[in-house]
Image (cartoon, rainbow, N blue to C red; front, side):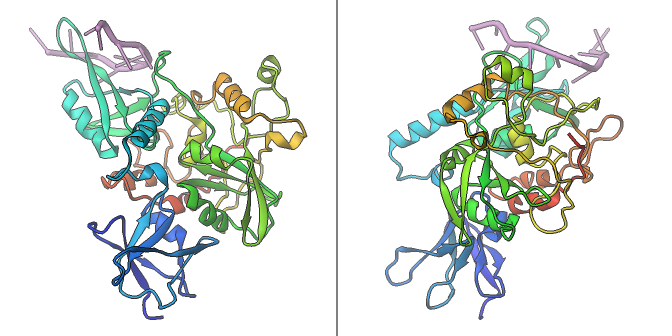
Length: 409
DNA sequence: GTTGAGCGTT
């Protein structure tokens, strides 16, 4: 093999990143998506035809063209809405923006320093993506800041990333949450899907590599001991939903994707006339009292982002996961499942605005609340966000990183 | 000019 590394860039004008090939000369898609979250394939411009050629992708591996990798610059391909360049028809853009709007909600930024201005706030959050709105709340009489602001992002991914961490703004640690008000909170489709009929040789990496082609995978959970199913969490709930009901072949194994459903309060379920055999979710109650214990954030994505600090295990070896935390798909009971109904029910049941997110648990210090003293060390995935490069992320490492010993449910 | 959990003059 003539190359150990392959230059890959997000587009032809960007600076490439060299990515390591595997021993067999292939490139793992997960290697690519670790640097380019959401990337689902590669292409290169053929010197003669001047057109792009796609790179073969199979089972999470990118295979070199027949003539070898050559000296090309390889360009990432992204699924649908990741891409927002020219050439898209206006109608599509409108649809997409509308969809994003439905997903995004206003966010409240708490704990701003008195001196912070609207500019400060906007500029800070623009690191995470396009900011559609930033309002600093002031006392009408004095004009003094009330120490909080409302912001809104254009993309749901930005929103989730911002919600998932604390923010140092002008010298103070600030929290960003979904506001209590009625208007604010919007839809929260589950980002997690249940993958049935897994075999034991389907590793978390295999699953991640495979499902990354559909969108950014933020978590892979395989119960231990082996239980023939797993969970895949996507950053984009729509990607997750789009896969439900499908059969996929991964490493020759036919697996089935269906709705994952959170553990529900049984009384709630009864009240709401829902099938009551939801499964245990990696969810737990906590008496924890620090400042992270009552944040509002999409629970599914909390886990997705690896901050739940509760389920252990996941990708790659080493995760001495604590075993439980499996969930069953609603479909497993033999009852008919109407996905729309389930989604609606989950929303009704308060999913998407779960408070009481337990903290602690994550040994990595990731989101262990600062309860007392110094500000917390920024979580790992935070650091990539703060590189100001929203296109880069350790997505494929998340699973490995959060081998929490977790609280039990 | 002070303050530090909260929830948005329009």
